[in-house]
Image 1 (cartoon, each protein chain N blue to C red):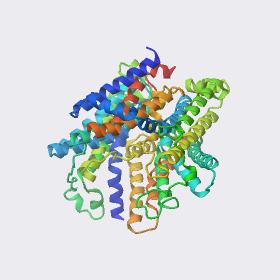
Image 2 (image 1 turned 60 degrees about the vertical axis):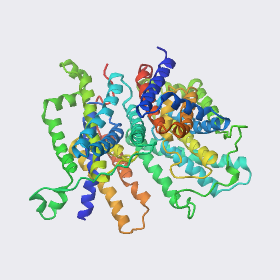
Image 3 (image 1 turned 135 degrees about the vertical axis):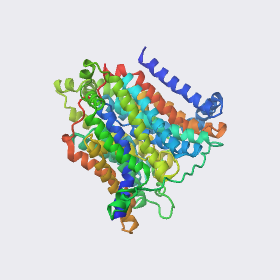
Image 4 (image 1 turned 60 degrees about the horizontal axis):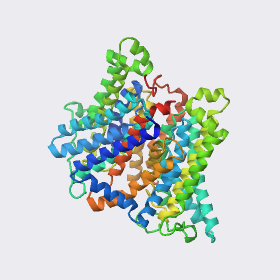
Length: 301
Length: 333
């Protein structure tokens, strides 16, 4: 049971970071369909940089930069050129799949990718807290980026609800004209929100390469960006709601893995559908109840 | 600037970016592009390969274009194509018919039906529960791909093959290499006829008029008495059937069996060509040919010059972004 919950947390970590980024973007009024590409760019940049500089910090900074770069592309096309948010996000995702695959091979010799092997980040048990029975191993014995996701969740909740900038950002997603009328610059707010979204989602990608897998493979995010997008909607654009949704998806995935490990004769392909099917079921159940930020997807003149 | 020249500019910009990337990796862009052109057009056989690659993008892209025109952002072609191929393979294996023509038509109908059914599921969730269609279709893509894998791991799989594939299709359903000297199946011509049909539908019928009105303004469509829900059903079913047909033709014409991942990325390329064709069914034809030739040329570019073939996905993604940035004014109107 404890293993199961720990696995759920592990699977939820990259989703949560991406979802936190997506909340920034969507609360500012830009659909975050590009999360998949932002994560993949972050995963790629983290792996290559950590491998080249032999430092995890280098990998993490590169993940921020790589994700933010995708954010810049999306922001320019969506905010400056007022293109459709959804389709632009899809385009960015296609571009990143190709670009990371291309750059990886260009970095190797003879068109073959270099072999990148990183030692995954180890668990950092928090002194004293990790010794608490039951809860200690479950909550306080994780690798560093998992703590970062949890702290990020608290910070994002505080930022959105309690800071002036957070208020401006939310207002931009609800009524950008009012922000403009009161002297703000809604276009700039949206641009910055999308770029920040990219950086944070890039960290989500870094979780995969630096903390879980230890290398980069083509298209390794495998739809996690879309699940993160679903979880922030299911979580109604709040960090806590998104965190809960990510944990549910993580649990669904972990449950499937458990069943297989115990030799239950259920098909692995059917089990792998669980997170997507659950996401669809929850979205369909919430239905009309999910209230989008009022001005999401609507370009500013 | 006119719309065609804006799109030409977008394509040119993405090719310039691709050239820079090639130079960055230490190769000569001109010889890389030359190898690519050679690989796409250098011999009748290569032209045939390019036409075969174009076919599914054109079929599915036309349906996507119609959906986007109606303001329905259907990203579900990826799953619908895979399931369509699965439906075609299952039909051909379950009901073998000796005579080629009825066998092929029945198998393709099976694929189109499955594609349409999957699109119908998306439409039902989207319209019935007010969930955004992009999210529904994206999530259903993953479920569809896993369903195909499940089918191949179970009833459709070839025993002892070692990886996920079906047995070979019966010879009656193989699409003939019908174009003399080109080594291409007739799917491309079917796709062109379909594109012409979609163009007629869009510009000469009441349904097409409703699509154009709804795409311009939902309230205007409702005021004019068009049901946006029925319209959404219509374009979703049509594009699902076309995507399913695309998958079926790929299975019967190219692979001759159902193989896991046979259509990986096709649905997203369908979105690319729909945008590149400015959501105009007839203009999707050259757009799909462009992408088909890129794909056909990429492998020989990799072989001869050593530039990784994933450059093609870079060009496609960049082209989409540039086209999106360059054509907004028209799309908003």
